[in-house]
Structures are given as C-alpha cells and as structure tokens.
Image (cartoon, rainbow, N blue to C red; front, top):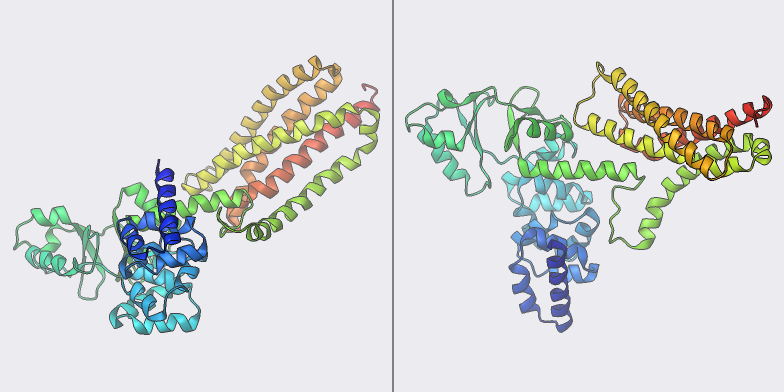
Length: 452
C-alpha cells in the first residue's frame, strides 16, 4: 500500500513539473511527510528531484536530505546555493549536521561551519572527530543536563528552556561539578516528584552509558537489551558529551542489516536499485570476477578426475547435485552463525560447541538428503554403486558445509573482518571443492577396486 502511495505522489509531481505549475507543486510537497519526500525524491530522475528540492523550505529540505542516499544527497546539494545550503544545515540536529558535513569537500565543509551558528558549529566540529560508525559519530550534542544539587523545579525549568531547540527529550542527565555523569531521570518520574526535591535523590544512579569509541552495533544491542529510548555518551574521563536516541539506533539497525545482506551477496554497499546500469555493472563486476576465480579453483578439482568422468559419464550429471546441496547447507549454517555473532550469542566459551553442533547437523542432514538422492538416482537408472557414491559424498559434503559455514565466520571475526562476506566466496568454494573432490575421489577409488 505504501509503495502505491509513493508512486501516486511521483506521478502527481511529474504531472505538475510538466505543466510547470510550481506553486501547486510547492503546496503539494509541503503536505508530505519528510520520509515520503525522501522516497519520492529517490524515485524521480535527478533533474526532477533537483527541481522539487529547490522548492522545499529549509526545515523540510534538512529532513529530506537525511532520507536519501549519499549519491542523491550530493546531487540535491548541488541544486541550491551555498547560502541556501547553510540555512538547511542550520535546521539539523548536530549529529545529522555532522553526518552531512563529513561528506562534503574540505573547503565546502569549512564554509558551512563558518556559516552556521557559532555554538552549533563548535558542537558539530567536536562530533566530526569521531568515526561515523561509533557512538561518538552517532550521538548528538543537544541534551538536558543539570547539577546534582538542582531541585526538581529547576530541572523542569531547564527542560522547558531546552525544549525550544531539542526534540524528543526523554531523560534529564545529572552531572557533578566536573560534568561527570552520575545519574539520569526520566520525564515521567520528574513530573511526579515534588518541586523542592533534590534531583539526585530521584535520579537513577550510574545509568547505562557508552564511551564515544564504542561501535554502533554494540550501541544498538544495548538499546535492544534494555529497551532504551535515549542513552548518554561519555568520554574516557566519564564526562557527559552527548546522547544517542532511539531514532538514530533504528537507522543503525537498518544499516547493519542491509550491510550484511549486501556483503553476503557480494554487492557494494553504495549500490541502489535506481542506479544507472553502468554504475551497477562496475560495482558488481569485481565480486563476480573474484567468484569466477574461485569457480576455476573448483573446476581444477574436476579436471584432476577427467579420466574418471570419461569412463563413467553419469558422474558428470550427478556431481553438481553434491556441490549444490553443500552450498545450500552452508548458506543455512552461515546465516545462523552470522546472526549469532551479530547478536552477541557466540563467545569463545561456546564456539567449539557451535562448530560441533553444526557439523553434526550437516552430517545428519547429509545422511537424510543423501539417502533420498540415492533413491531418486536409482529410480532414474543409476546403479547401486553410483547411488552409494552419491550417498557418501552428500553426507561428507554437508558435514564440510557445517564445518566451513561455522568456522569461517568465526575466523574472520577473530581477524576483525566482517563475517558476512564469507558466504559468497570462502564457504561456497569450500563446498564446491569438497563436493567434487569427495564424489569424484571416491569414484576413482571404486573404479580402481573394480566396483565400477
């Protein structure tokens, strides 16, 4: 339903653009939610998107820029003047402004920082020093904090003042004289307390917090585990420097999910479905060439047994089944293991058990599917010895799938390489080589023993 609504918006906008009815177009776009504007801009041709973007108010433009990918964002920014872009950035929260400014050329970034408010500029510059995928890179400087000796009445007044510039205030953070975080108070608890009560008496002491250099994925896990809406960020001295809100974490979770999907499929993270064909070709070709190299490795194993295949041609018909089933089983294993790693379910203590379990699962499923494959092969005219070969090879290769599908992600994680990339290259290569080698190797042995 949402897709149809978006398509209706796009068609209406295209019609208004063709008529050059800019007043009607401005009014139409002004009624859309920022998320819908971003989706519509992504569905238009670049020239059309630029025309629509120029009609947006600075506030709407600031929100829309955050809803599109980096490529389109650069295109839209080029459609407006530097002064207009400064107005757009000035409407953003500091974390969003830092994300957008970090993508700009150095001179352009400096011009924007000089153009926005001095206080906001200083806060954005502090955020720019942190890597984008860390807590420091995701936090925003806007927050409400009070000293420990503040009263509830003074704290509520601070919330009222800050609410003019901060959206979605969920917690007030309590700090000592050195600005070290000592507690946090939710708004509902604050409202229910008496006006003269000291804030430190109702604050939750030692609240869950993260350091600036913690990876964004770990931050997302903490939000999920403790059902948080907002979390303070501190430096290594324990001083409060910012906060991360749930909307930022939702973006992180979505980003991490699609990043894993793309890596498992061997795709560049920057590719989008609406990209020109030429861009997609150049982004996919390197991975395909790497896969081609691994395919030749598997083919070289087949070549070793060329004589065996020439003597019994049916082997060439059956051997892709062994390799294909191994690849499918390995994909199942690696998906479960990568998810376990992402959720923090796998540790050094249970890693061996997980590997043993996955090998056992592979061996058992190999036994089941191998028996079924043997029966089908026999019904299709293969003799019992060929059926036995198929059974043994299938069982062995699914055990290999369980071993490689569980070990390779763990090894990559150990070397601090994203384990999601392992399925498309390393594991498939293992199951292809393992399947061909076991099936054709055993066939060669059977021939020399006179069974075939």
